[in-house]
Length: 181
Image (spheres, rainbow, N blue to C red):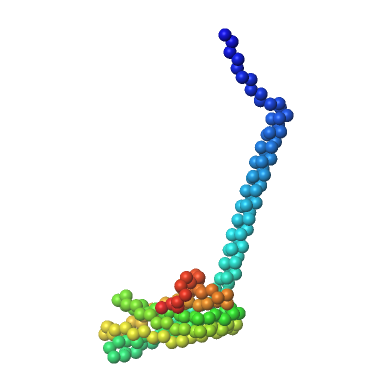
């Protein structure tokens, strides 16, 4: 009884060399394509980042703060006042600038007021504009009267029509379309 085994033809050495060369060429072509895709993605990300920096450049030339302070007794309540200042160091006008001033006093009380500038024009010599705001709080009778601390935040529209929120020195694109309250 004889068994015959099938004979497998593995091909010639030149066929093997050609096959390995083809596989290597496909590998390098795929690697090159993958590198090109990664470079395109990196370039697009860099372009988006540059566009974002360009968009923020105008907004970052805005600032606001509260300064000074006053108090007056008004029928059992204390009226606290402060000057809200805004400054536009850019060469373009800001629109619909609303600054919210928040007074915080002893006992953790908090009152808010806001002021609006429909247009805030550029100030090449860094002169700010200001308006007075006041809040009312119950008179606790404590003397000497402790003045509240004031914080400000703002919403404004830049030259590109982008609405920005300024708070604690940071800028973010505003997601809401209504002014700060």
